[in-house]
Image 1 (cartoon, rainbow, N blue to C red):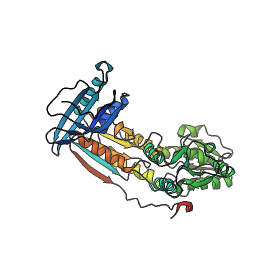
Image 2 (cartoon, rainbow, N blue to C red):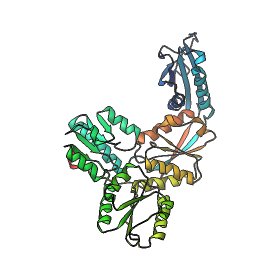
Image 3 (tube, rainbow, N blue to C red):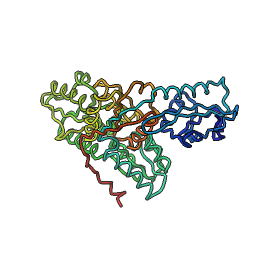
Image 4 (cartoon, rainbow, N blue to C red):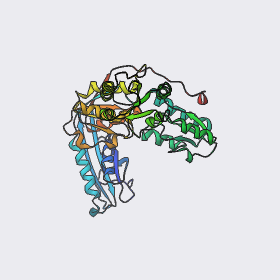
Length: 416
């Protein structure tokens, strides 16, 4: 069988999202993202589109096809690729054949245990909404210092509509609109924006703003402020900037052992909002052992969303053969979910989307645990479930641990 001339670029492999020309007339290929991701990891250009097969089987030396049809209780699903004008010596033909075989080999029925809550939290929704409203009200470009939230899909979509993400304010034209991300900024950054005449809109998560307020209050009463967090994270840098002379950072219990303070009776602690609860407890215990008079915030700094997503993951981790966490690799709360699954002894991987999933992860896997970090859009988990359905029937069981009802008001500058 040969493909129609929908594959035109030499060296590009067309991955089918539907096979036309077989019985029945159209066979869906929901696992196309899996196969395309496999090829892209091998640095082979891949595009997803319908593949039209010639039932007459006419030959065409320009096109090489590989197809498979999987039968299941819910009907038939296909896997298909076509390469156009690719020399056999290039290795692309063999790579396409290998990719198809690898994914066909892991086709089977599966159960997906879907953690709930998952995906966006109220602070993330608020920050993203700020940028969208500014784009609607003022048009582009709208500048954003750092990523508005740590997710590549969110950033790319906003960029397509006129958002411009910059590392520092010196990249923003004077007088322009700039948004501070959900992770917050230091007073130094706010002062710089004012000096340069920028129209600064603050999309900092209110729970991060709470930590900033506590840092100032604890420092003003004469305490050494111990911040538990990850060095280099934008939230941590912003919090350290609130009282830089009085705040010290510790990442783990070992750091506590080497901590020197002016007055051991006047020590307070704060935490980054996206930490793992279990690991933070260990650091707090070490702090209390060293500083019996240790004081802290009236309520936990680790945000409700991080805690809820960790609790939901615990419910599914032990029952799963594999855990997939949807989130970008700079998302702290997403990384903590992967680490938590590992502590439960379950293999776990962080993926930006379905294209990051590898066939070998699914070999022999009957039950997939699926969740998403607080900065990952919910559609990405839905797309993974759809793609898994291209490998066989999928039974989805959602495990809800709590109903989230938190909402945050928008900044006054963008309210209707």
